[in-house]
Amino acid sequence: MSHILVTGGAGFIGGNFVLNWLSNADADGVINVDKLTYAGNRRTLAPVEGDPRHVFSQTDICDRAALDRLFAAYEPRAVVHFAAESHVDRSIRAPADFIQTNIIGTFTLLEAARTYWNGLDGDAKAAFRFLHVSTDEVFGSLGPTDSRFSETSPYTPNSPYSASKAASDHLVRAYYHTYGLPVLTTNCSNSYGPYHFPEKLIPLMITNALSGKPLPLYGDGRNVRDWLYVEDHCSAIREVLARGRLGETYNVGGGNEKSNLEVVHALCDLLDWLKPKDSGSYRDQITFVKDRPGHDRRYAIDTSKLERELGWKPAKTFETGLCKTVQWYLDNQAWVQDVMSGEYRNWVAKQYAA
Ligand code: NAD
Ligand code: TYD
Image (cartoon, rainbow, N blue to C red; front, side, top):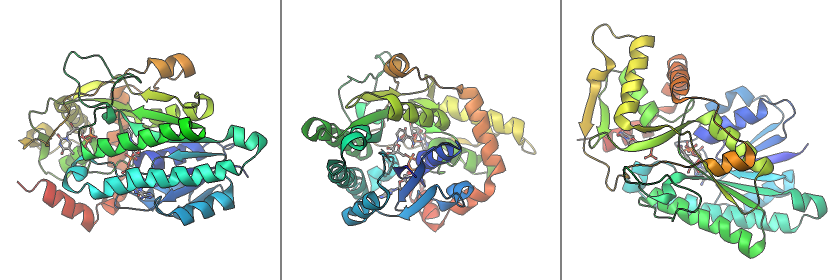
């Protein structure tokens, strides 16, 4: 059986990617390489646990020997690299893990892939792909009237998270130019949807709302993000993997620029409709808290290259995606309770102490 090797496939986007991929009966098998940090959950993968096309390996991408063994055993035709430390607030409090996984881990994976790819011949060597999943945050922060980020926007990362992702993007680029490794990079905006760990804005607000806790908006709540439903992020990755031009980067986004206040209002209104409280609105729980240090003001992404070259477009509007997401959290409280471990509770206590 032909395989792809996915890193970080027990996390939010990687997990959705693996589930979507294997929902196609003709799809290649998946070697799912994940260290299972606090953000990785085997429970997300329950729908494919009995599928012989899914092989899970609890492995750190910094472990070169383990990666070499996986490449040798399964001879993947491609790597799709999601594994990362991904939460900006955690990168501010404790950046070391971000440097380790996002930079050293990506470097280690690139080295293992390069060695493996060098040993391939003929068609297998020509067909191999290394797709690196990155973020729009590498481009820094926009003012209200600035043009959206394009693939040629300068890199100006502002948080330890975005700086570590920027470093990994540069390494991926260098492996193409120096060694000819057939790489592709996607830089995507904020994704949301099922299986999103409840430390990020949308799942945190849903979870807090349902348990009667404050909905903490940083600063004035007017920072703007572009939101993309996770299945649309996954479909963009599949398109770039199948038909992207080698060495190129592709911006991915939803064309949904919203302030955080707008997002939280929309969530409260959906919850008022789908799970009304005995009295009042979920909006009553909104509180403004101390701002995130160095908080990027606005992200907006120009996706015309991806649309023009590969014909990709998101299938979901923000309204339909958000409604599906809220409904998923209401229907999957067992998953939420399972991931809210002691580690999660410690994080919330530290981050929102004041
Ligand atoms: P996530 O934090 O939900 O999941 C990360 C996964 O990587 C977890 O399963 C974790 O266990 C695993 N992991 C962490 N360190 C590892 C290591 N050393 N070795 C092996 N596995 C390790 O993250 P996510 O939101 O799913 O993001 C996935 C990727 O997409 C990241 O590279 C992120 O930078 C990028 N991205 C995320 C967004 C977003 O909105 N979430 C947007 C654009 C790009
Ligand atoms: P987040 O989901 O952490 O994604 P990112 O920082 O990668 O964009 O945050 C999205 C936005 O929501 C960002 O502007 C910070 C803000 N935010 C809050 O206002 N309160 C919160 O408790 C969190 C987690 C985020």
